[in-house]
Image (cartoon, rainbow, N blue to C red):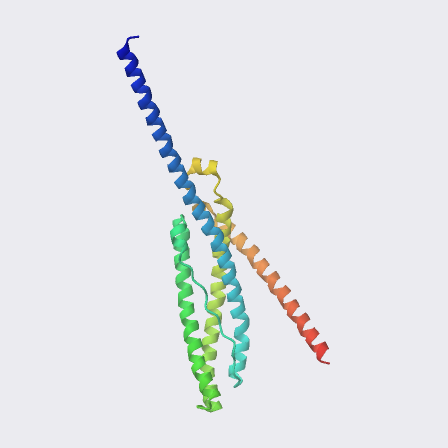
Length: 240
């Protein structure tokens, strides 16, 4: 082998080594970005399920308050507790990778915003009439007339909250199923890239999961009611 041929082989070997090193570096960077994207999607699902759970608790609390609110004001009494606003988090749009879920979440948040507007209107309106009554700017009869208007608004908000509770459970069921299927394993990501399960989840699976959630919520309600009854019994026995 002459010197020229040897130099050509050495040059080609150096080039091939640099080329493959560059190629492997780019591939590693490519798969790393895929993993990071899938991880963001999964973390967003986990966080979203937690937030929907908290939202369900606020809705439940509001539904619990409304009958007491309604009975108090229509009886001519003042009610001091407030119906809470429902939190809206739009940060998940950036991290979620499933377009169907993003659309569902967008529609869901839009319904939350409308319901919050109704809650704001009721809260602000009742605050004005309550303060006027406390400061003796209006008579009881005037308070009762206005209370009837707010009573009708409360009944409407109660219906909207019940509907939103069902929407929350349905969305939470879908998110929970997706989180169980979209766990970011390295080998799975390398094979399937950023494949998500949203489109493959059947409606009957969501319904089954929603039924489980309904049972969990009812069980929590029953336990909470028993705890309240026990506390009331203790208070009554101590006051005797």
